[in-house]
Image (cartoon, rainbow, N blue to C red; front, side, top):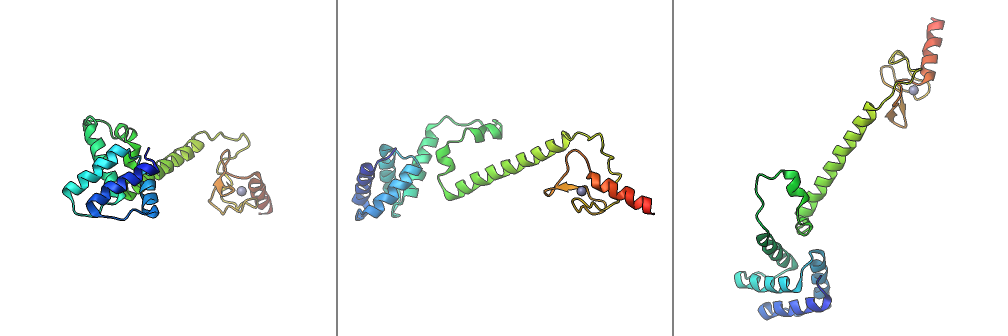
Length: 184
Ligand SMILES: [Zn+2]
């Protein structure tokens, strides 16, 4: 993990190329980036040298992170392309996942999609585990509006916005139907 003192040293290295004036603001910005992206001093220092060896652009923390990650990636054994995607994803370096805003957004989208999928699975489970209430008369009352929950004709009864799990209609709906039939 990079320290404040090391960041000051890094900015000195950078200033030998670009004559930047070190400031507390600059130091703090670089420290924050370096901490987030888990730079080590040696990696960051050689990244700055590497950057100015090949590039005229004013160096920013993002350049340092990109160069460090590229180097770490090269150092790792190559990944056979035949590996299942899931396995490759599970083994991604967390540093890489957050190295750019775009990657961070992609990573979050992936998590959200996984959560949404899980939610649908749980909902499907809830339907599968539905046990018939012995007093349930199935869908026999669907042609009556439910006086209890307000479910309209043809719709299953709901509780707090979700379909009932163990029966399709509230008992009050069956009573309402019986009453209607007896009046007819
Ligand atoms: Zn109801």
